[in-house]
Length: 483
Ligand code: NAP
Ligand code: MG
Image: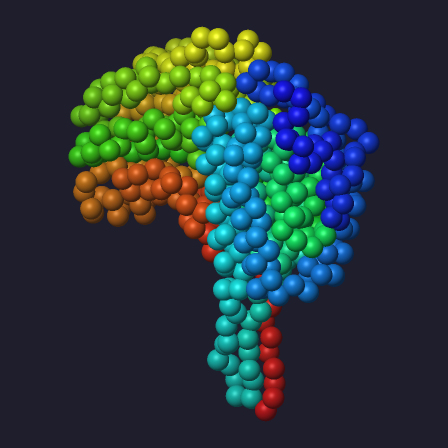
């Protein structure tokens, strides 16, 4: 396949100040399903980041900065409509670029459209307040944009993350510089193309693809930015926060997880079963909120293990366009990392594995999903994010032990509890350390309306929903003395 972009834009270009321009150098673009090179992308440099930050600043001083909340909302809604009209193109583009099974890529494109609709609708609905104060004063608050908002995002859910972070930033009137992941730039560029078509003023959104250590580092430490939204790994998040700290710039960090589902003996296992498995294997486990630990009360441990193993036996892995349960991992490097973890679990019991279907291209980065038992809660496979298709089953005796294991990794992105006991539902929802807790479900369909983010080493700040708008804006207090 020569051109994964269907000719709507040139993937070797940067989008800065409303103009498309070729980069001095390019990087290869790989299709993870085949390992083949399918094109190239721009290798944005520090000088390109400088230009993008400058263009964003100019937009704030120009048409974008003057746009009313209603106008901002309308342009976001228009972007959403254009995304909606290109769902299939976007899904195919993503499937080729990141190896995501086609229907999962389609869901991401649908979510992107929905984010634009949500944040378009929200733009004119965040109000300040008036504050009762001393005699002779009127005091009120204004919600203002932070300014130039830098967005550094990973490769696993490019469209969903663009939706939630860029959507919220534009909603509040910020101007954005987006650095997509080197392995997944196409839909970011496609989004910029649609934003341009929708009439987003020049410079309100700039896209600089490139390497993390070049374009990403230049952006996170840039003295001209006012805010960073980072989604990615713990170690890079740490570096980004340090770099932003040099300029005293606020940072939203959305990092990884080791998210547990806690199943008590009174749970409805038939309802739980698809959630238990799907939350571990969606996007081949390369999901920040993947549920990679399944905690089961001992009385039903063997039963749940057997039922999950049966499901694992039906899981198929193959090329993204075959649209099976799992596609390949994003890269050879990611496959090595995941296989390295699986080797560390060689002493554990493999309860079941899915299968890589016949005829998959030898150059693709396929890993069969694995269900693992026999780990202690402190085992590296029960502690660290694997970011691949592997789930670890852990038994527990009672609520105390369940909470200790569930909260025992230092990470805290998402958690769920499965129980019919209403009091226990309430207690567990309070006791589980996570930014989102689900009761008798997992993920709640991903809802764009639902605030999302981590506690502990999973990060800080919230994106998604209305809550994101507070993180993507700042409050000004105005006190008028009129006597
Ligand atoms: P990553 O290696 O941290 O990369 C994330 C982004 O940071 C990429 O755009 C990367 O660019 C860039 N980057 C790399 N080095 C940089 C540096 N020194 N300075 C500035 N930017 C730099 O993460 P990943 O491997 O792509 O994604 C997987 C991780 O993301 C997992 O830990 C996962 O849990 C987490 N994640 C979290 C969420 C959430 O919402 N909490 C969502 C999705 C993923 P290049 O890739 O181009 O080098
Ligand atoms: Mg790719």
